[in-house]
Amino acid sequence: MAVERGASPNTLEAYGRDLARYVGWLMDSGVSAPDDVTRDLVISYVSLLDEVGLAPASVERAVSAIKGFHRFMVAEDISRAHPTADLPLPSKPDRLPDVITRGQAAALLDQPFTNDASGQRDRAILEVLYGCGLRVSELCGLDLRDVMLDQEVLRVLGKGSKERVVPVLGSANRALADYLDNWRVSLVGRVGTSAVFLNRRGGRLSRQSVHAIVERYGRVVGIEGLHPHTLRHSFATHLLEGGADLRVVQELLGHADISTTQLYTHVDRSHVRRVYLAAHPRAKAFGDGL
Image 1 (cartoon, rainbow, N blue to C red):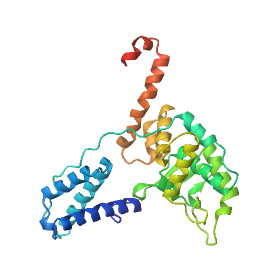
Image 2 (spheres, one colour):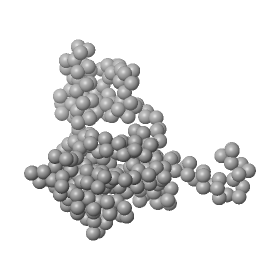
Image 3 (spheres, rainbow, N blue to C red):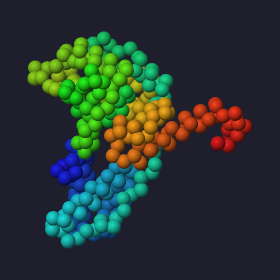
Image 4 (spheres, rainbow, N blue to C red):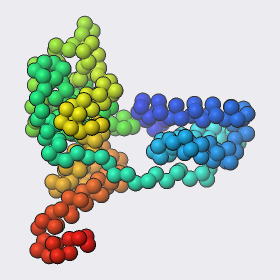
């Protein structure tokens, strides 16, 4: 997966956990050789994942890892049995992404931040997450060489080590410039690092720390359980509400398949309905039936 597919470290870690859990269960079930694994055994394991309450997306990833594992063993002549050859991936229910309103976004970003390195770093983090639609891993992976504020762009390394360039404009650009010019130096430790966003010890800020930062500032303005990915979803949804082309949003988000981006059009339909009700001369007569 690392060499041939260019999978990210996070994906490799997740698949590794899935396979370790799977192999451990097989061994506990008395299975000690790859050729002893049957389709019924795999189905029983997947059913167990459902029963213990694993999220549908996590079950789907686990099944994908297991299928790839057995396919690899057959390809490498480690095993003759391919018990998952015709095993379908479990269906994942459509779930609309969580988004915040434009008003909530304004409240989040316009709240007072402490006038110190940590406060202004946090302000830049929130602005960049919402203003550029980055994944939290992409934000944490930013290096100084990736920031070209004079050209108003960031170079981002996304899933599968795919590089893309995203615009950083307006308040996101100003907040990031202020942090880099005036505050980042206060966080740099004895051993210098190229990371853009630093913790108080001078090291690269972790994904877990960014999660905690986003949740904390969200709570201040009354948004409970705010997640960095919610800001990414909101970035996409608000762009579509503003009339952005779906293909442009796909490119900004770094989605390989536009069907992934199309999920946001479902979110946008509520906005379309409101606009229709407010603007169409015949809407009010039939509004309750829409």
